[in-house]
Length: 215
Image (tube, rainbow, N blue to C red; front, side, top):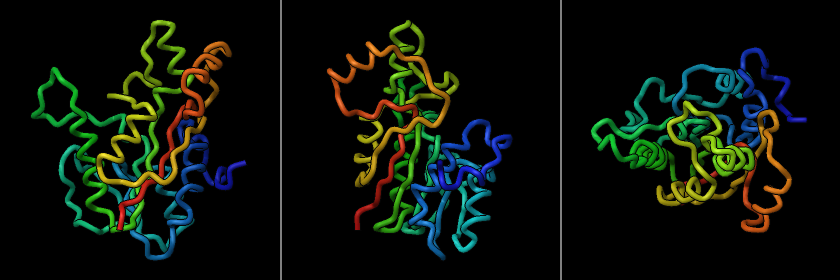
């Protein structure tokens, strides 16, 4: 049983209550009095509301309506923690980029800005759907799109997620796959084959990562 699950009203969470509850457990040690915590890409929603109620001494801020593809109006070395939850998969390229080529310029900017905004030793908590999950692999084998949710701009696999974090300067301290939604179909034969080819890789629906900005 997740420690904070009963603090999220399922009717208000659109099926994300398990992800929210687990996310709070991941960042709980960082939610100390006076800590400046930025939540990327959102206004008030159930996760932010819960943090404000349960950790009132934390200075919780959001990036609001800022376009995350570009430099943010936040000073450098300002945050103790940044939460970037289910944002990467929505990141389009910058508008001036060649529309025929996807360069990840928006995603790269968001991670670079997160690195800049964090204090030395500060933490980035990130979650994103795992396109290398068993369910997504099975969809691709059936001839369907491998993406977990088709309206997403671009979902990431576990290796490229970690690579983008490292390229931005982060040290990746914790990196796990977690099933936070209803189970998806995947034949046991496919699971066995994938484990032989690439064992011990995160194949769950969602990637959870905790990284820090080196001192």
